[in-house]
Length: 288
Length: 158
Image (cartoon, rainbow over all chains, first blue to last red; front, side):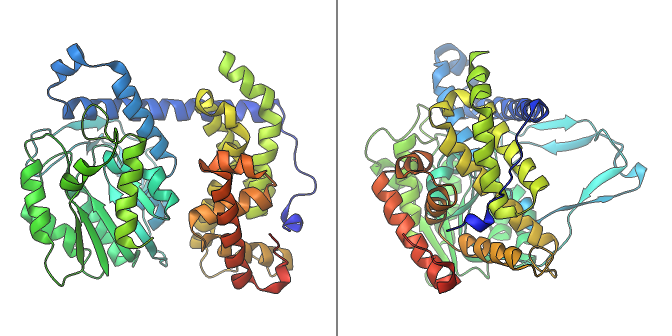
């Protein structure tokens, strides 16, 4: 029924095509390895002390988690991509100094980390995001590595997912402000943040302020044996006021009702059965 | 490396699948080839995990990547016709992609894999990680929605 849309004379790939594909695969592997190292570091940090992890840890556990996150990477989108950044030429002096990027910042997190990356190879260009006409995302889910692991299950239920390892709420405030300004929020925004460090009331308020115009904001508490979990969850629960646009999914409580072996050994990241349970919870609340 | 040997053996067939999906959606050879190469690079990068279902996997990844590219293209040129001309085939393609994008992801994938790429129900189920029954119902619902959106001229039959 779609025959007229098919190329009647498709190209036959040659050795040059295979070489191109191999090179792209090499680049992908390098990027995934960098992500993997980052995720292993995050997982190790979330376990009870990195030394205990090294002594007692089964390497397979982090491999499993890493692979589940890797599967999630296949389906997540980058919010910047939805905003549609456009690369524009800039003066050569605009980007010559090393850039500093916080990989796991938190307004009062004990796990602050900072990495310094060299300046772009070509200092004559930089990336500038342009405001373009908007197309709201009807069902958007934003989270950290817990959601990333469940991203394939969420995607199958029709959500657009932006989730990343080590993500913290404070980093998402300016992103969400831009998203709001561009009118990209749709009917539902699911938020699952707070596993990787504490956030303050002020941060939560600023974050939620960007979602004032969203009809349905689904907030999820976090499950992690960490010092900041109780305080983060208290703030999230208190944010769910009667009659407002927010709905709370108390993941810390409901996760304990997940039937079967739902979690990896860290008690945080989800095995496949847990990913389905997690996605079902969200889909049920949304009505998907 | 044994992994890549299997990939090389299937390379031409996999490229054909990825290109077919990409071209059907994008309608432009260069862009479709680039999209197909991206899909195959992803496959090669994780070949050990997908080689037993490589064809449906590549089909799914290429399809979704092509739809993403189409979306970016239309957002980059919001005031132009979707494909830059009023050629009936281009407009037809644009209508189809718009209608596909409006479908829930599972229905969209089922329709594309079954009817655009002519995969069997079994291969489609493998690609989507679900049962053949789910494929059947998702395809049926997806086609029904497309009929409503696109109208009778498309002759969309189950």
